[in-house]
Image (cartoon, one colour):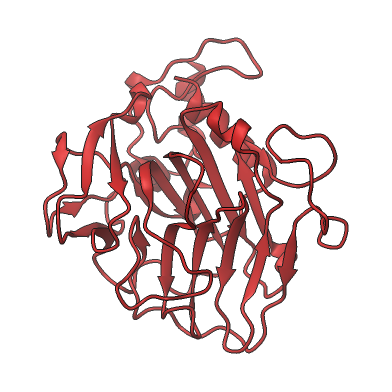
Length: 305
């Protein structure tokens, strides 16, 4: 009854948007830390601000060229596969509620991108949540991308070979970026799947970018097994390795698709980065920055199965 009571408080549009299947939800009744997310879209915070959900589900096997990956809610943006080969494939996920996942082998010409370039354009803020199953990067791995080759518009997110996370909001003159302290390869190898989240508050100040790994912010405040333990500049950049404010204002990025897995053929943006080698699942995008508490809630409820 508590589940039904809570859902009844949500706006009807939000219930329909997220496609909540209440019959599949479970509540252990254990209070804090309870596991309730039997259905993947349940218990997602700030659901009225969600711009995209992609479950990346499909029939096990190669992703077909020009195939359409549906949105997770009615009227949401879809993805289209652009395949030069058979280097993206569906497989069953080891996380039962995630059903399938997509795996790539780093081929730059095999990508999935928003069907319409205007989708996810000119966002007033941003949160991107995804689950990844990948090795510690031997080359800079681009996780998502929407830009004009890092020239004057858009944004993108890279997991660098030194273990740092690097999100950039492209400006007309100087790009805004904030680079995390290096992640520990030992910690990364200790788990099969990791939950990565980047948030941006919509300003041109680098402190408006935050990264979260497995439920909490990646910020150097002392001993943290997720970090290497050395980050010489963290005192100057609020617990992060580097930071730069953006200048020159924002230009519209409506003419460029949002891309997962691949790197556009025309792209040589700094940092030079390769397509993802590994698996990705459950990509959710908000048009605002979630709080640390909201990210923690999302992680706990998505990983509970």
